[in-house]
Amino acid sequence: MSEKNTEELNNVLGKTHLSDFEKYCKENKESMITEASSFQTYVKNILSEKKITLQRVFLCADIPERYGYKLMTGEKHTKQRDVILRLCYAAGLSLEETQRALKKYGMPELYAKIPRDALLMILFNERPGSIIDVNAWLKEKGMEPLRTSGVQE
Image 1 (cartoon, helix red, strand yellow):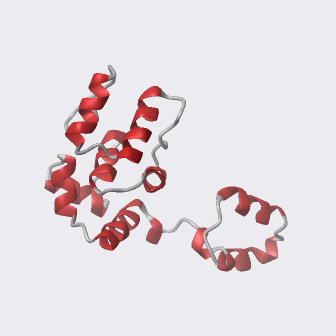
Image 2 (cartoon, rainbow, N blue to C red):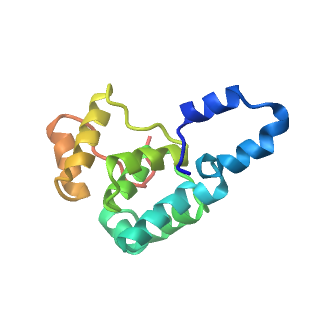
Image 3 (cartoon, rainbow, N blue to C red):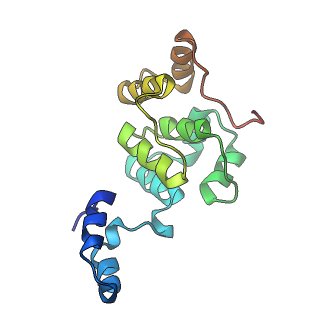
């Protein structure tokens, strides 16, 4: 069994009787959102596969280590999508993995109709270098660089 997207699950639900709810959950376990599939677990699993340490990610993302660990344990929550984008970029996540991480964190995915998001999507695909390079590209195009974890509006 593989993970189903929301549309596939909606189609299955349209044909599911109330008495079959437990069966639906069991058959679609891989597709269901649970604590085990949270942002933190998702990113940690990818890092483990890539053999990258959290410490390295925080360093490359230019995020204070202490703050980064609090984000990754769920002790702290940020409303700044740029912080999550920094973490994803520094962790070497693909655009698809980044979109999924944003969704799991409860943030909007990058959207191709928003110029800054479109440029970020290209940057995630092409990987021109570090976060500093990403910010240089954003600034060159007259866009806001990826914010850090400091207090900002």
